[in-house]
Amino acid sequence: MKRIRPDALGPFDYTKENYTRLLWVAEGITEYYGQLMVRRAGLISDQAYLDHLARQIQDFQETPAGRS
Image (cartoon, one colour):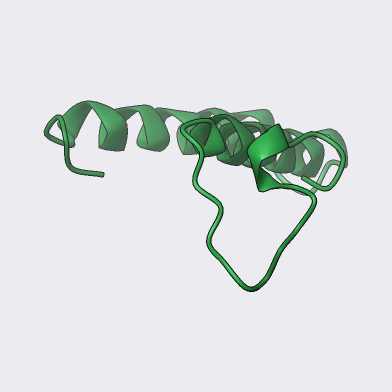
């Protein structure tokens, strides 16, 4: 996430908090490509990758709005 991140997160100032509504985008990209790279490297099967995606979607759908 060093190269692709919301502008509000950098340059980094560790003396105060940086708020942004786009942090979910950065986290989503990191999660998606992290699992995809594991699959492409052959460390997990297609089925294991799809099972992981299915669990994430199910968890999202079962989480009440406003709570994450």
